[in-house]
Length: 206
Image (cartoon, rainbow, N blue to C red; front, side, top):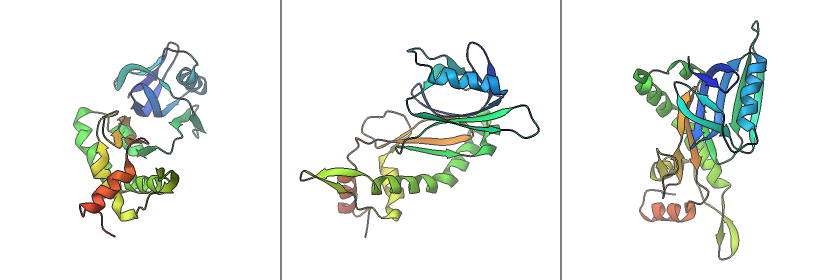
């Protein structure tokens, strides 16, 4: 099984999503003290990261500001489950506990199939994000007119499978284990102009 490690402890890694070297999602199981050590390393106020995941990601990484922890003691076991995630409306996560077992290179196609089946959840998240999105119109704040069934079209137009890809509104992040997909919605993307363009081209209809 993949692991999370720092200079002191090792715990079982269940899932991970990274934006460059910043953790936006991590799921793990281990003894309470060991899991606490991993959490402390992720949020340590130092310039250098100290946590890595052999078998998944050899770069050291840490959690970004605003990361939250969620704990659960496992019944009939001296272990705890910890989930670390960024609480940001721009982040879309698709998780599946069964996907934690799909760690081999030969499982890639199965992971993609599971993700494809769950993409409507991501489309719904995009629709909610755009409905709440404000942009400046003639010097005044305005909201985007978005119909829920437009979301898949906007998603396909805006998505890049690589984080930080210039010119895209949705960046696919590196994911492992029980995190099937993680996507960052780019707040600086010209969402209003794109929707107007898609309407003009007949790809979005009222």
